[in-house]
Length: 259
Image (cartoon, rainbow, N blue to C red; front, side, top):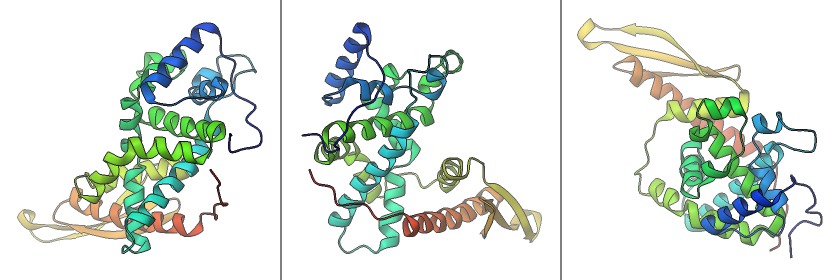
């Protein structure tokens, strides 16, 4: 039985598109009751804007999928890492559900071949853009949750994110905090972080830099390093870990989800 009481909605599916969506299902391991929901999950804003009013973009499904994905990963980490404090869990989760991680999964299940984008995005290489792929994957997760329920979506998420989780736990991921902070800032505040040198000292061959970063109207740092890049990374790490903790503490409580 579908989890939600109402799985209506989605975008119309013609014969040609139906074959394409069935091909995606066979490659991804998903099976939708309502292909209209899957079709909407693939509909980027740039595509929807070029169609008539009967076509909805995937942003609402992306919003839902982001929360469902977060819950699945949080539940898994909570059970698997029973001895880790909240801060560690939040930090690990943020790496697992980062844009880089989700875009990689999206490519693995061939989202890039089936996503619907506008002509401008098509010409500018939209099918290779990590943001478009990651957002589409979240929308697919949201659509699958509506279509088939939490148990089914948990199985799909864990089947495809297990390598990312293992990578983070084994510390094989690349801790590029500047990239992570930029992704977070764009998603939450629709802007980029701004770095500022507060001071520097020492001779040219042995300088030390102190740099702060501004995100969402707040200043973080300073980060210290022997060059600007190192100091920016340190400032970004402080900002990112603080913002992730704040987000985790202010997120609403999830309802009890029954399979």
